[in-house]
Length: 239
Image 1: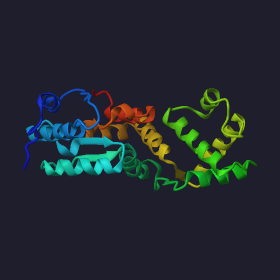
Image 2: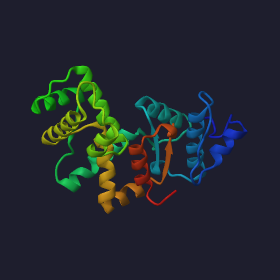
Image 3: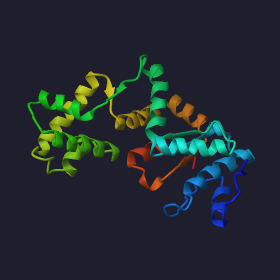
């Protein structure tokens, strides 16, 4: 079995051995960043600095998460939670929701554009599919940048397609109302709900921070403000 530090060059070794405090690995594409990240985790487990069940490795795609789990297994490490932001947040929402609300968490919308079409019909609008897709993108942008609908209207005053900003705002409000009536969430809501639970419920915050002591984020430069907020809440006062 390959040792955690075998085959690493001088700079990679420096990063892999830095087990405490925040560490930023800066390197170009194809230079082995993911390799260093997995070796760093494996080295931390090998030396006893990390308990694998207390490590969360966050990636942007399910494929990348699977690859990371595979690399860790090849290094003899099991038990690390390697997931996307959404998968990790959804697992926490589904776990804590029944305790907090007394029922099951809302389901995930399978087609945001279709729900927007129903919402549009309810407020007397008939945008075409392309416009609905653009409105869906505007909702995603609003949420991942942590803006309210009111802030969205100020920052995006030109509207979407043939819809004025007032019509877009009305459609977004109708979408949110319909979503709540159907007890559903979109992908951005998963992160917002996870963040809200940790912020509002000290017992949730304590449980999450007790479970996960060490975090690794692949491609951190691509993290959205919403994802970063969730990460900060997972960390708490630890850095």
